Image (cartoon, rainbow, N blue to C red; front, side):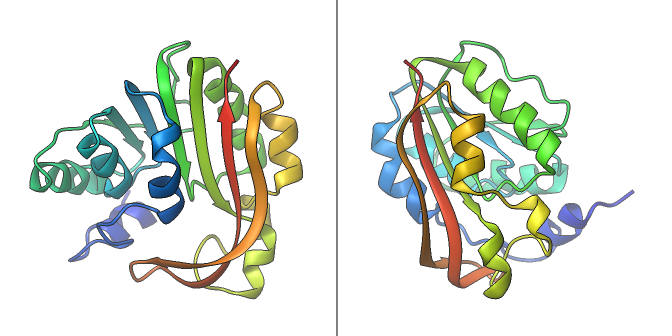
Length: 198
């Protein structure tokens, strides 16, 4: 069965562009050098960027089509990334292994998200950093990207509970201009997190 993501990533060009997410670009220096896990990395714009900075990147996505393009993009950038095709509902995050875990516009049902965030906390090494940007329910009024239902989005209040074991250096809701390919362009309601494992 072809998923919506295989279909989207099977088209010409890169659905969300080749440039990394702005928030990730701005906060990547806070991630200690080492292994970084990119969740729902799609066509690899964020993974390839981090690999270019010298991180050892593993990009996970449910779409093999997206990850094939991710590997091509990394090669184009002169780097390599490890790609893993997996459903995040049952993906095993290796414990105490990652210097960084990155979740950019990874929208999941609440039960899956909560379980995944618990795995993220366990997966980080001491001093490891979690970087997240997601749409929050207020995004529905903008309609400039993201899922069509509020249930798949998340608020800062929810993330503060789910990530309580991390030191949240940043956990903020804001509206900002997002320009990321054909599917994320325009004013957007987002939540941003930088969390450190103590």
